[in-house]
Length: 48
Image (cartoon, rainbow, N blue to C red; front, side):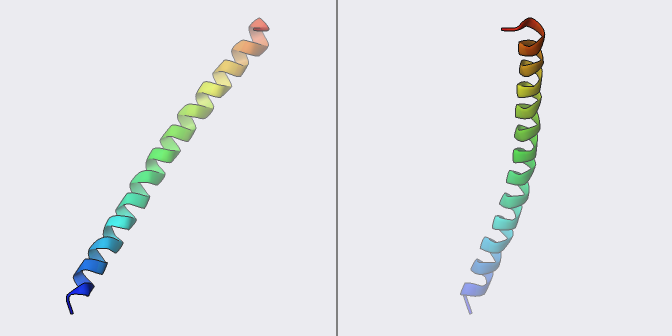
C-alpha cells in the first residue's frame, strides 16, 4: 500500500505548515496591530 506513507507525509507537512503559518500570522498580526496602534496614537496626538 504505497499511498499510505505518502498520505502520512502530506498530512504531517500540512500540520507543520499550518502550525508555522499560524505562528507567523500571530507574529505579523501583532506587529501590524502594534504599528496601527502606534500610528493612531501619533495621529491623535499630533493631529496629523
